[in-house]
Amino acid sequence: MISFDRVTVTYDGASQPAIRDVTLEIGEGELCLVAGPTGSGKTTFLRTINGLVPHFTGGTLSGRVTVAGRDPRDHPPRELADLVGFVAQDPAHGFVTDTVEEELAYAMEQLAVPPPVMRTRVEETLDLLGIADLRGRPLRDLSGGQQQRVAIGSVLTAGPRILVLDEPTSALDPTAAEEVLAAILRLVHDLGMTVVLAEHRLERAVQYADRLIQLTADGAARFGDPGALLADGDIVPPVVELGRLAGWTPLPLSIRDARSRAGGIRDRLGPPPAARAGIAGGTALAASGISVRYGATVALRDVTLELRAGEVAVLMGRNGSGKSSLLWALRGVGRRSAGRVLVDGVDPAAVDDDGARRMVGLVPQTPGDLLYLDSVAAECERSDLDATASAGTTRTLLDQLHDGIRPGAHPRDLSEGQRLALVLAIQLAAAPSVVLLDEPTRGLDYPTKRRFAAVLRDLAQHGHAVLVATHDVEMAAAVADRVLVLAAGELVADGSPTEVLSASPALAPQVAKVIGPGWLTIDQVREALLSSTAPGAAR
Image (spheres, rainbow, N blue to C red):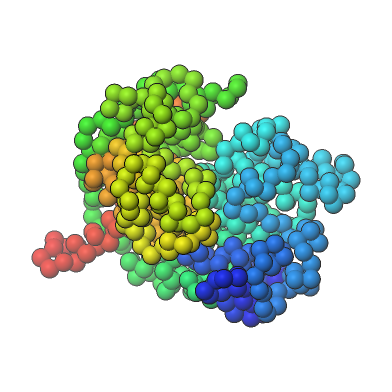
């Protein structure tokens, strides 16, 4: 169905190819998972399948790509629309209509699909993706996760034989991600559709994959059975790391596989570790009675919470539960229908933006929205001026967060991890006592997330109050002193990671699902195993 023969893509001015000498074949009706470090060329690889590379991205493509007998170099994306459905990382950038139902119908209108068929396909797609209740909603009013499901639906209605998805679950809560993946599996198993899916959160998708493509930092590719390739890979989900620690062969790819073999390791581990002892100090931010409305829609209803200095709190909840609305309300620039926020006795909404920035720093869901200059150096210099900080402050912070980013690099050319580090450095230059981050791990690989978790812990140790809104349960387990859960705009849980995460089928990390409540991370398991085998340890 899809063939790559010694394919190399090099962009103008790049020091090395984005993908290099890739040779592989993806069969009809297969689900192929594409993995690799941030910036390894996954998006470039996907875009060669429908002709976006090189028709719209530029650059030089050598070698040959064949898609159901067609060469994308000879057929631009519009001539492949009946064959390949493509969903990009940021779905909102691809919308061309105003409402959900209109967006689902648009591609069929361009392909002259008869109206009765259009109506049937729209209804089937609404049900398949669980978005029937969004039918008449304006696209601009949807949460990021809701937009992503609509984007997937908009290409499915055209009836393609191949579906190409760039991180389709990155903006989805765990339950919604499972629903989308279940829908994709039905397309593969029941309709024989070929699916090529790039994903950083392998814990969500690897157990469903027929084939795995591992792209390396230099753009090369390994292709084959997922279990075999993950045996010695650096980018692996927690369940595979657990299998390595336990010495299991073959390595488990799913919770079910791991749980069936976990009896021995449970006996070796003994009782779960004590909950992390935070170093929280006094109240850094106090919010009371926060309510937010968008017309008739209630996003937040009477939310009251405190953030403490020296603490990392994680905010979770399904898509549309109000997490982003709460962060913007706390920052003082978002809509607030009722309630107040106090930082050192002052409401950030009552001061100018420069003053609010010194109180509360916010890294939004798309960090690039805060970058508007043509180089990293220019962004850092501007940040120093805006924060009235000494020259070089932002650059020093950036080097601490992510060393090696070139001063002359354009912000749009940075990887997701580099862009996140730059925006966080800009926010920290003003030395805010409270730091808010909205879905900061989207687009980050496992090693980068581990480094980012260390950054958050370091911020807390230096006295900042940190609040992270995320759907990433593995990140929450690794970094949180405290977990808060929103549902339908109300705060429904507030407790330790062990209390909140372990007790939830949806929010429990992989280690907790395999070994049991109280165990949250691979690091906890590794330390316990080392302690049990240390000289003099109790047997």
